[in-house]
Length: 305
Image (cartoon, rainbow, N blue to C red; front, side, top):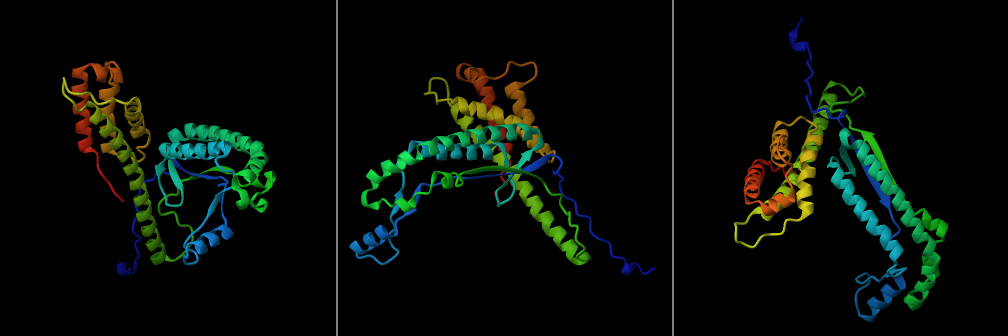
C-alpha cells in the first residue's frame, strides 16, 4: 500500500461545554415616544441660515410620561441583570448560561416578563389621556398623525428570551470535501475557543472589579480615616465566589484555586462566616482579609480580546 496516498484528517480538539451551558438571547422592544419633526427641522435650519440636514428637531410625543418612563427604566434594569447572570459568547446578542444557573435564570427572566407586561398595560391605560395632555404641551408641533391607536401601539412592546444549545466545535454535517471541511472545522474551532476565552475572561474581570473595590475599603491603618465599606461590594464578592464555581465550564485549575482561596477566607470550614461588620470592627480580620484579597488580585489573569 502506498502510505503517501493515505489522507489522515487532523483531530480537532476543543473544549466541549455544550452539555454544561446553554445560550440565552434576550430581546426587548419599547416604543420610544420620540419622533423627528421634518417641518420644524427645516424651519430651524432656515432660521439659522444653516445647510439643509444640519439641524433636527425631535419631539417627545408624550413629554415626560411617568408610565412610559417606568417601562424604559425597568427594561434597563432587566438588561443589567441579564448581563450579570450570563457570560459573553457571540456578538449577535447570545450570552452563555451555565446549566447550574439555568433554572434561576429562566425563573427570574420569566418574573421580569410578567412585570414588563404589567407596566406596559399601565402605560397603555393612560395613553389616550397623555395624548390630550400632549396637545397642550406641544402647541403647533402637535400632529395627531404621530399617534398610533392603543391597539397598534401595544405591538410595539415585546419581550423575548430564547434558549438554545451551545454548538459543538467541529460539528459540520455537510460533505464539503476533506480540504474544505478541515478548513471550516479549524476556523470554527478558533472562533469557538475565542468565544470561550471571552466568557471565562468576563468572570475573571468581574471578580477583579469587586475585589479591588473591597481592597480599597480595607486599605487603611488604625487612626486613619476609614473608607466606607459598601454592603453591595461585600455581597458582590460573595456572589463572585459562587459564580467562580458555577461558571468554571472548562474545569480551569486556576479559577478553582482562586475560588477555593476566597471561599476559605470568607466562608471557611470551621470558621465563622466573614461579615462586613467583622471587617469594620476587627483590625485582625481586616488585615488578614486584605492580605488574601491582595494576593488573589495579583493572581487574576487579564485577558483582553
